[in-house]
Amino acid sequence: MFKDLFHKKKYATIPSKNTKRDIPEGLMNKCPKCGTIQFSKELEKNLKVCPSCGHHFRMSAWERIQLIVDDGQLEEFDARMVSEDPLEFPGYAAKLEQQKKNSGLLDGVITGQGAIGGFPVILAVMSFDFFSGSMGSVVGEKITRAIETAMDRDLPLLIFSTSGGARMQESILSLMQMAKTSAALAKFQSAGGLYISVLTDPTMGGVSASFAMLGDYNLAEPAALVGFAGRIVIEQTIRQKLPDNFQTAEFNMQHGQIDKVVHRKELKQMLTKLLDMHTVREDAVHGG
Amino acid sequence: MAGELQFEKPLNELRQKIDELKRFGQERGIDFADEIARLELRYKSMEDELYDELSPAQKMHLARHQQRPTSLDLIQHIFTDFIELHGDRLFADDLAIVGGLAKLNGVPVTVIGHQRGKDTKDNIARFFGSPHPEGFRKALRLMQQANKFNRPIITLIDTKGAYPGNTAEERGQSEAIARNLREMAIFGVPIVCVVIGEGGSGGALALGVGNRVLMLENAIYSVISPNGAASILWKDASKADQAAEAMKITAKDLLEFGIIEEIVPEPQGGAHRDVVAQAESLKDAIWRHIQELTVMTPEQLTLDRYEKFRKIGTFSTLEDPAETADLQAPQSVNG
Image (cartoon, rainbow over all chains, first blue to last red; front, side, top):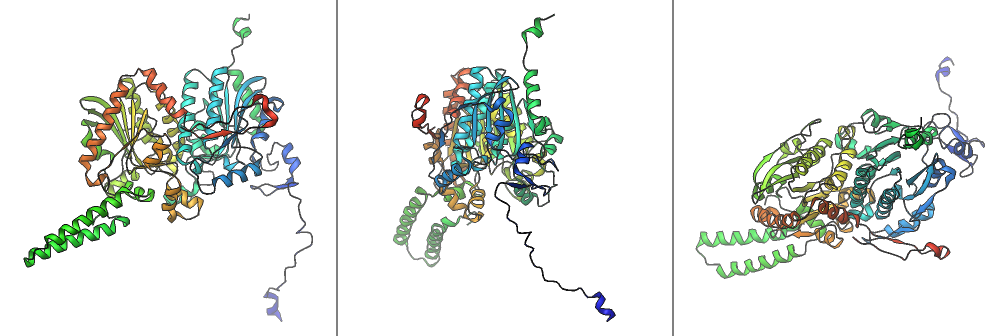
């Protein structure tokens, strides 16, 4: 009948054999932003930046060090410092062990001395894959010691931040790490020390509200989330949807909070340039 | 009873019974003196028992009590000649923080505090005591002024935390807090901070980098509100009481951790039971610390404050048999 033309035919969905083809763990990678699937090796070659949309994937501390530090060579400080459980907080000790296993790190930051473009620097590089980069006593202490070493050795300081904020399980001790690191920076910076802060995705809460926002220069990677309170908390408070670009690096630059958004491919070059700007060469001053 | 807390209910019920009995006796001309005396004794022992052993959660409820004295209440009783000053000179005057000049026993000081509202309308104007960046920047401006004119700084901490809003983020909430932490560290004048109610997170610490940090007996101080911690840890904000226990937020805990120098006792039942007496004892404590600090030089004050915060933290160093060459002995620094 003519009417039948307007009836939708019902088809059963039979999963194709091909759609469920298993992708070996770690071999392929799907971009969370544009959905492009690519080989992990290709992605790594591209500095973990999606070749089709430019999304910057998160990097672990050691990946970051390989990327930025000359020859990936670092004289590491306090490599074996570990967290305690001062509050005997429910589940904290077990979670620490699990985080160590998953990340291969002992805590959320790697510190040490290395060179960038030939310039010796003191580095602190946070890792989001350990406990969401949260700052407890160990992160606070290692960063404070790195600042003090930069002061002692009269070297520039670079901190790569990525963190969900202060580590709740160390409660007030975590909060006080914000004051401790900021006080060390006060000393270092008022004595003329150079501090470049690189904010990477995401840098939130107690870390952004202490050392991360205190750089003489604050740089950020494209689309990195940088802010104090999280989007969900704010949406619940103001009862409004926030724009998509809220708290991105670009949003922060537009609102005057950071100096520059720098693509990962240009980051090392930009850091080298900045370090060079702060180096007075004898020959340049006295030369003819 | 206005502002009654759940755990105070049995006590208040007994009080009502005593009052009823008194009234009944008067109306009927019957002498219940013995009975009343007996109940009063029982009331007293119940009261002592209740308030001597308050749990962290009960203290949290007292710290948030709607009648708890605010910064302005205490300023009025502790200082004379208070001149409130407004604005950050950049954007606005944030009413969630108040500050200005005042005299403490005749000595000019700068006093700054978080300010909760007294009623709904006041609370809306003051964002429930949760500052925006302009509030922190106003505080910083007043502290810089104090540093310039060599006046001691006294801060009163009472906030659930920095305001979580889009405009606060746009204007640099993180930067405003971070800058206060850095600048407070190097002022050359005495800084005495007192947590008078709730010390919530970075918004509290932004007024909290002092040579001396004191807490009222029932005040709390933590990295995140117990409600926030509960919703993150157990996906259930109503478990705030449990989180309050786990997070070690009381004045006693913080004294043990070496975070604060002194606990200022409260009147039985909390600061709101006798604001004048509370202000009096707090004034004595603040004055004592200011006197001790005033003899120090600016350099000594900066160093003293630096060392106080520098030593906070608990960690240890793993031994590694493979690296005996540069091995450090296991250490534990507990501030």
